[in-house]
Length: 129
Length: 129
DNA sequence: TTGACATATTCCGATATCGGCATATCTTGT
DNA sequence: ACAAGATATGCCGATATCGGAATATGTCAA
Image (cartoon, rainbow over all chains, first blue to last red):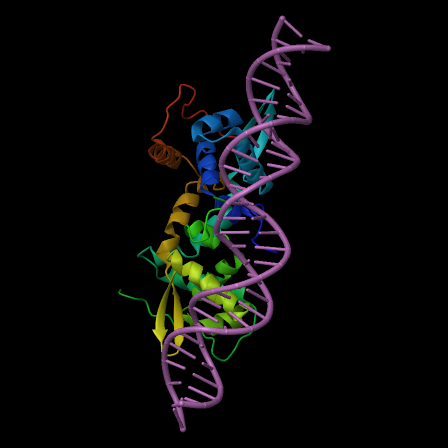
């Protein structure tokens, strides 16, 4: 076992800049492969490979249109990523008050393991009001 | 050149589940390495390695406390990820109206390259209203 | 200084990646 | 059938990864 496969989840799929670029183009609307090739300036096989990865994790859908294959963004597959980072949004957003407690609660649910004597919540001191 | 280094950006660093797990624990407060080792059930060297990666991309900060090193979450380094996925939030949120136009505008700014005759905006048809 | 603890670094093997190139598959048109 | 276009797949080499084990660095205590 080495690194997690790029098709393991959306996190890995999206870690590649080219793939993000593809999604950014696809966000504007359904596109055939060749359009992406021209748009991104990549070789056609690489684009197809990237699209395959994106499809494996369900971030894009395909629709056969004659001899072309139209790729379309499937946004909801990115929701897990959004949900995860959203948890940390408070760290750069000034206004966090009651929200803080809600997030603390979310953290607790993810724990579930070894409550050692050293572990306690709420020991963080809000830096620089 | 093979795959982008895991220290290339936050996207790559966070693609690893263990690393996300570390951040999740760190979100509750500053912690020494050994606590993370116990919490995650990983070997100490692996934890140190993961922490190194997270530090390279600026997602965590260290603070020497005696013979211990206290790691602390540095959330804002995750903002690029948040900003990127936020663009796609509309795809799973029902209420998108004026927001749609704003996002379209954001897309335009990221372009800046080869405006071929075939490329045009706004050719997407909202599926399944 | 010696010992114990806490953490970081290095070496290793296995694996999955990414781009480039060639080629196979599938579809349309005549 | 044949040609041409569009897309997918396979092979290759180079590289960066991940976990494991051993070891090096750093810090406190007596």
